[in-house]
Structures are given as C-alpha cells and as structure tokens.
Length: 330
Image 1 (cartoon, rainbow, N blue to C red):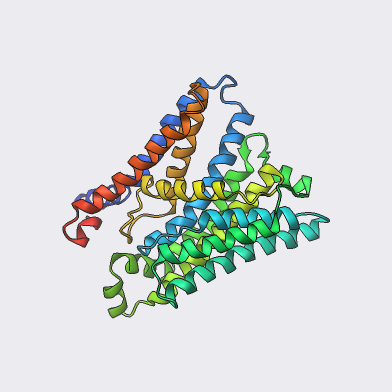
Image 2 (image 1 turned 45 degrees about the vertical axis):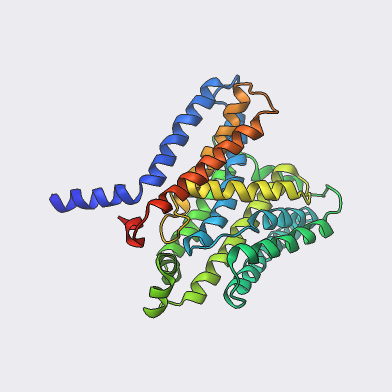
C-alpha cells in the first residue's frame, strides 16, 4: 500500500503541469460557455474546438524540439506554408484530394527534416537555424499564394470542420488520433526516450550510447508533420490560403507559451504533448473569454501579450531557481 501511494505521489508530481493546465482549462471553458449568449450549443463548442485544435497542433510541433532543449521558430511559417499549399492542391475528385492531403503532410515532413539536418549536421543553434528556415518557408508560402485565395473541395472542408452526430467535433477526433497514432508510440519508442535523455543532458546521453543525432532529427521531422496537419485543418476552416507572416509569428509565440503552460520545461528533458494541448486550449479560451466579456478589441492584444509574457517568465523562473539539473526532475 505504501509503495502504491509513493508511486501515485511521484506520478502526481511529474504530471502537476498538465493536471494544472487541464483544471484551468475546464474552469475557464465552463465560464466561457456559461457567459456565451448561445450557451453550450453545438456550434459554440465546434467553433471553439476548431480554433483550439489549430493551436494545439502547432504547439505539439513546438514541444518536440523543446524536449531536446531546442526551440523551433519556424513552426508558424510551416503552418502558413502548408496552408498555402493545401489551398492549391485540395481540389478535384476525392482521389485528387487524398493525393493533395498526402502532399501537404509530406511537405511538412520535408520541412521538418530540413530543420533537423541544419541543426544536427550544420551544428547551428536551433533558434538561429529555424529562424532562417522559417524565412524560407514564408517565402515559399508567398510564392504559392501571392494573394489570398484558393479552391478547396467543399465536401472535404465541411467534413473536417463539422461534428460527428452533432456532438463531437471532427477536429477533436483528429487531435485525439494524432496523439494516439503518433505521439504515444513515439513517446514510448527508443527515439522518444532518447529525446528526453538528450534534453536532460546531451553529453551524458552521448556517453551512454544514445543516438543523439537521430533523436534530434526525429523531433524536428515529427514537428513538421504536426505543423502540416495544423495547416491542413486551417485550410478547411478558412477554405482558403494566405501567406500571412503575422499569423505565423503569432502562432509561433503562442506555441511557446502553450508549451510552458502545459508543464514542459524550456530546459528540456521533461514534459510532453498532453500538457501542451491543454496549455493551447487555455490560451484559446482566454481569447474567447475576452470576447464574451466585451473587452475593448484594441486592448485584447495587450492583455494577451501580458499573459504570454507571464507564461514564458514563469517557465524561465523555474530555470533560474535550479542549482542542479537533477532538481528539475524531482
């Protein structure tokens, strides 16, 4: 019995970040639904889910490099670029749409692989490397879509943004599928464990025979895939594509804040995608609450900016208090 209690205590300590983010989201979303004029209607929940899942997927793309003590400043640009690509290829027959989906996802994998190779082979700092590659992806997005527009298969877009049985948003099903099919197998794989080891101590991981290069490369590749899934969903939500650099930059910033709110350490080696998802949902719900409480639209960016600053500062504050790296994992 004592052993079970000890194990539960360790688990609660390890999961305090995700659990706190989940509790905060539930409380905030309940307040949002109670305050919304339409109440807990299907349309309100579906719209909120679509917006929240977009950020959650981009934030998951950010989580993976952070686990290895890196940072990917190109996730927003990959998100925008795949949106522009999807707005070009998601048209025609169902077969053509399926090929278009595959092309969009493949482009995300390629962009992630480029990021990983620049970081691993080029041995550049992740921030510098992804800042440069992000500018390239933004340029590709502008080349694909010099002006906003697109011709999307309406049936596919309607399905991706609808609700199953008028109750469960398809976007949430996609998010859950991404977690079950991609994140959980990766987390339990040798490369997933290696990523955590690299984030804890790259030197110790290398000396222990951990495949450091492959672990780092895999995080960026999968990050590109998550960003591409988000870009695909954005195309279905807006039924268009736009090379919006401001949108990409804001999603990159929000993704970092979501990672911190979800309990993933910017120091690397601890955390995960589940907490990040709830962190992203918290950030999106903050914006919804500002809307239902009729806050001045001109003040909303300032308020959200303060929230982002506090979120990132709290994550950094923990790092300043660390005297030994092992203290992070107690």
